[in-house]
Image 1 (cartoon, rainbow, N blue to C red):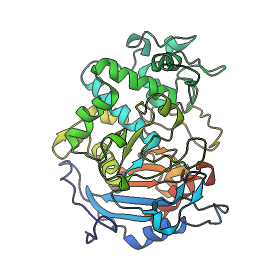
Image 2 (cartoon, helix red, strand yellow):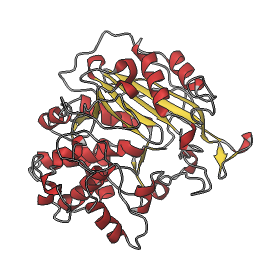
Image 3 (tube, rainbow, N blue to C red):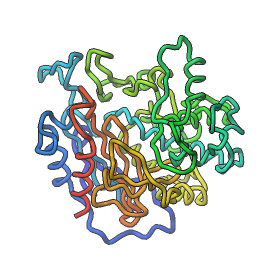
Image 4 (cartoon, rainbow, N blue to C red):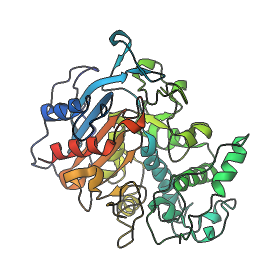
Length: 403
């Protein structure tokens, strides 16, 4: 284990013992130096991102054999004010190992876990039409969409929903539920990434759990796992605001810090199944370890081993993928997690490797063959998401850890 150096440097925590069936690997443990080199590199423009820095700051957290190996922080949690205008050095806020990030679409993994808990409880059938649980989920062809299709992104729903121009949240959610399929789309046939599908699943959780999504998350995941730095609407519960990592600083919405970056989630009040969750690198790693352990962590069983096995099975084998932003991507996907995707996993991509990315610059990667959980959280959307491609940072880190 590496020696801890406090909350503003490299640190390490011992995690609870893993599942009895996990046999420690003899693979050499990663070290801090190469990880710090990779993270520091993107604080400035690089040949693969030449016009701007890749991000203002980042935190990487790596676990192996259920033990934390390293946590490295670089750069700043806050570097720009609205405009965007670069702040003088004295007003910038340094990144910490316990900085709290907008996790963006990593939120989808937590929503998937909440849905699969309902499967474990016999309240949801993965192969049942969504409309069985949500009659308001209407539109041509949508009676064929199952819960599993939403989790696997094969529903033929579009990426986003129209939520602007409405006066109330009731109207906004009605628009989400009546979002039409993409033109020519046939449910169950093609991978097409859809945030709408996870928005719908968030509502399914709320209805069947009898709780708002943020309350369900707290009662069913974060409290049992002891995750005190994970949740929606962080401005309500983060006492030390210096821990909050900034995202956008453009004048359209001003500086965002503790307010969700995703516009749709923001219009929906900051709590949605596809985005809106905030957390630290260490606590995101707990979710990866939970799944690697077969549904348990720290003596708490969150999911059954059987449903975790379903979650981590590639359910899209042989299906085409439509992704204009990543034309080389495959359809490989479990129930709520990406699988075997070199575009962000780099050399660590493998048939059993799984995880998820977030638009704001976040990622979770679990490599079962190496018993590793790797979290990279960056604020690449600070001050402007168009300044960099976060996949370059992810691949660089994962390739460095693959050696």
